Amino acid sequence: MITHDQIGSDEDLAREVLIIGRDIAPCLDSFPDGSEQQKDAIAILRRVYKTAAARGSHLIKSQAIGPARVEYADIASAFDGQPRRALRALCGASSAAGLPVGSFPNERPIARLWPERYG
Image (tube, rainbow, N blue to C red; front, side, top):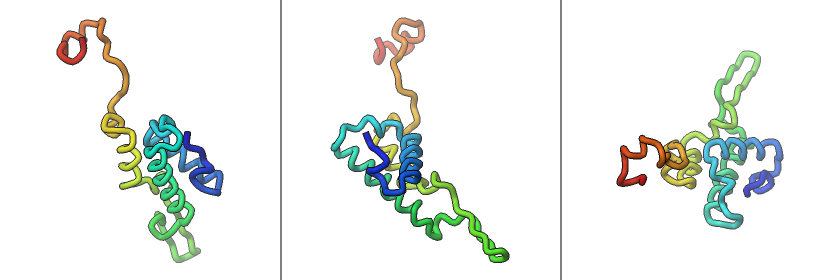
């Protein structure tokens, strides 16, 4: 199981990054400790953590010169693009597509619609 201390030193930020990562890819906690999948997931989450901690110009949502105001995007925006796709890819094709996971009801009449696959 991936823990916040594997992500970064700022506990609150690391926990938030981990929670958002789990929301994007619920399979993160299913990786065996020390597995390549877990190492890959930790690497992705660390990169997002570093991006969020740096709060560089790429996370600026709006900026005003008058009373010198800068508004940053939320932490979830650090997952936009490649990190989001990479985490979903770790969970496999069915999770990445957002398809439901479960068993097909074999005992109900609908099971006869696809007898070659479910029967």
